[in-house]
Image (tube, rainbow, N blue to C red):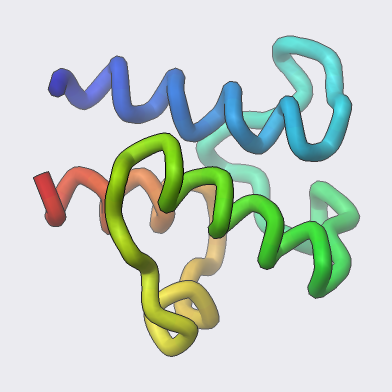
Length: 78
């Protein structure tokens, strides 16, 4: 899986959860800048776990600071 493919899939999944326009999410977006509440965060993590067939522990998920940190974690597991 290429780095660009991972990035595109993560951004697409978050866009779908939030119902944002195609270019609404960038890798530098934070949960605060996206207006995510705790339920949104859980939904995003669950969708990404399903999309990439992996498990993201709560301590790891809590450490995500922006979309880029999610992408980096997924890259490190592949």
